[in-house]
Image 1 (cartoon, helix red, strand yellow):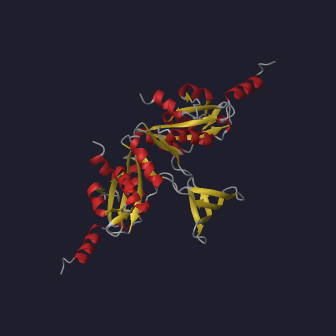
Image 2 (spheres, chains in turn cyan, blue):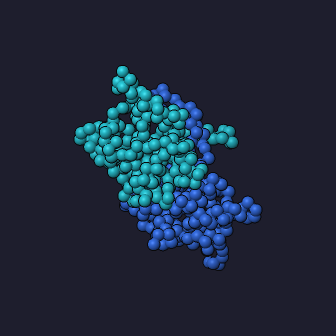
Image 3 (tube, each protein chain N blue to C red):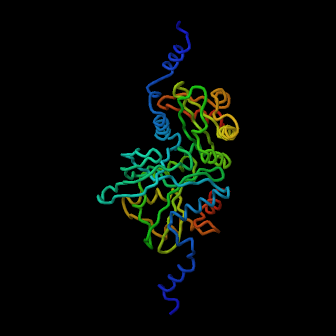
Length: 190
Length: 190
């Protein structure tokens, strides 16, 4: 009885889970970047959320209060920066799906932006967090483009199997919940 | 009478001014970056303004309205991106001053950020627009650090003479109001 599928999955998830993995995914990435920055490893920051500001109240001079604003669609990705002289650019996405990553999570202009970064010599990719499996993958922008194109005519998602065979699983490092630079060290920078 | 100082200055400014130079400085930089992007020269974007969102009204589901938010101090610079495989990072500042650039225009964490970028192999600098002189300069981050340190104990500004001798004047290119990549081509990338 011990080895029936559900039980096994559940056990595995518990084993890989840690205090870090309990965090919000964005916080996990931010904490990793903070570790990289504080330890002089890399300079990678999250960009602010793009906002269209419509009305600002300047009554209190000390702190202008924005009273009307709207979210704008981002024209690039959430994260970029610099590692060992190389330009780094990525988007981080979370899914509750257990078997595939729905392509609709990535905007077309983000795919274009990742392609542009790659064309100009940058390292561009997405990080996908399967929260129900507690597994995190690094997928190169070239595959993002490939599957994005495919979604126009057939499958609207990237299967976990495709991600497993074309991407790299990201492991957790000490005080680095999402140690994606390890993948870059192993596969991009010799 | 023709050559008395005010008259001369006024004439000079008129001569170098163009339709582009009449724009807001930020727009000039943005238009330049757009030109670089559309012509597949470089991928350099302005980061969104950092905002602390306090209250959002979700009444209309189609467009969440932010009803209370505040400006946050930026932790990095306004612009970054990628050119010929190199990481590019800069801050753009305008001054009405005619003889020097007041250091208080640059925050300490921005100086630190530019230093970090340089230490990791990026090309980091500031662009200074002397609006009354209609002259634009490129100043490497190493000089920004140097003069920032000096401002702690003596002069609180960088003189135009210092900028002229340590920086590079940026000229206007065809549809590139602030053609700073020309400086990078000539002095950073062989």
